Length: 577
Ligand SMILES: Cc1ncc(C[n+]2csc(CCOP(=O)(O)OP(=O)(O)O)c2C)c(N)n1
Image 1: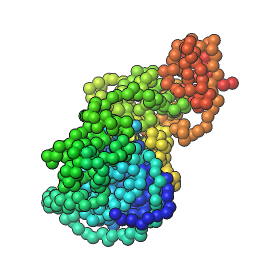
Image 2 (image 1 turned 30 degrees about the vertical axis):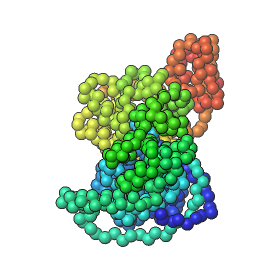
Image 3 (image 1 turned 60 degrees about the vertical axis):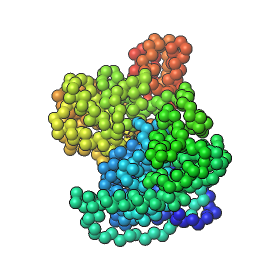
Image 4 (image 1 turned 60 degrees about the horizontal axis):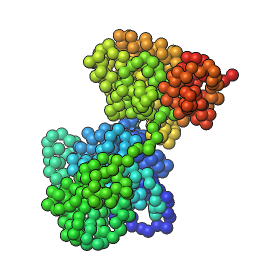
């Protein structure tokens, strides 16, 4: 591995921070990402290194292409996203496999087994064989730090993008890592090479056979690299594993033998066969899909594997024994707290109006997706980023007179909402789109985006005008309103829903985590209260229902937004005197 130097400086790093640190030490020049849990902190950390050109890109496809362009131009580059982000970048990824790189290029992708914060539960390891790319899989922050350096070396040695797969537990757990200094890696010269970089059919056909040869060379590398290591223990029991389950197995079966895959694809078939001979009982344990398991079986090697019920959700230490015994997963009742919009969240105003108007809401991905949970229950579809405007269009094609509203946030609009708006205009669609502009990317922790006018380092940049974009796309009506002005918003929504036009309402009010100004909590008149419960439908965490149906306001949580005041028909909740 590169940089074997033993360092005396230890830093407590998360897996994400370790990737950033290791990449910086490996001479990283350019890093691009769109935020997404659990990968966000990689770029946030890299932005702290002044010799890395770091950016929040507008979406993952853009991030991938900018970073790849920098690698082809000669500087080591990195792309980072969550698993679903890679879907957005799949188009450039599949052909980047053909062009190869010049300087090292690593795509770090963080999966989210257990869906802590995602719309699905994908296993990115499939992308290795699909895109014919090498795939590395660290099992801890310290490994992430070491492996990322190795990933850049592999990328340059084999002229290939490298996939670097992490999971939430690796990305977010912390470990002491012995860190070192930044390597001085010179830029590689860019040489014009049209057959290599211009993927027209003729050139791509030639490159396809280059890639098949590259896969064979990578498979030979996989046999010898210490990233795939055999740890000899008892001859009775051996595990083939990768990623975080390795840690859990070591705790549960410390005497067993292990084949721990860190260079998961292409597979090290000979090493797998050798390991199988070493042990009497062979068990494959991996998180999510049975990828290693199916490959081991395809080699004609008998191995036990987890019951399919363990293919759903995150593996936990207590699952190891159950998996070993071939048992079914015992589903435990969820103790997770219901996620809810923050007190004072500006999105709540908009959804209270949409609920009142009995709209069908084609939603999107952001904090506002929480409006789907009862009692608000005012978001009726959520598929992937940018899909609100397009699903809205699909609904309207079947229900032309329905009260359909597409709702998305500022960051999501820039990510992939704009194309849907252009499509609606071009295809003569009418309807209503509401853009919830809270001046941040709140869901992932408050990152800047083009509409905030600030870069990843919080430097001022040209601010994208969402209203100018909507007008330029051809929307018939573009209004900017403060959602706190409920009656104005309600009247406008009614008017636009009735209009034969394509309308956009931009509901602009900063996220409560950006504008932390708090006003005093409302006054509550217990006598006037009719216990109708309308205020509780707002799903505000600051409003607690007493046993007799009255309101108990939690002063520590209340942000003083007074939406409950405007909702109360009995005048029991009032702005403080
Ligand atoms: C393809 C993809 N990339 C990234 C994410 C992670 N993610 C979920 S919502 C979101 C952005 C939300 O920002 P915005 O639309 O402005 O809404 P807010 O949360 O501020 O209300 C991001 C980055 C994702 N789910 N899918």
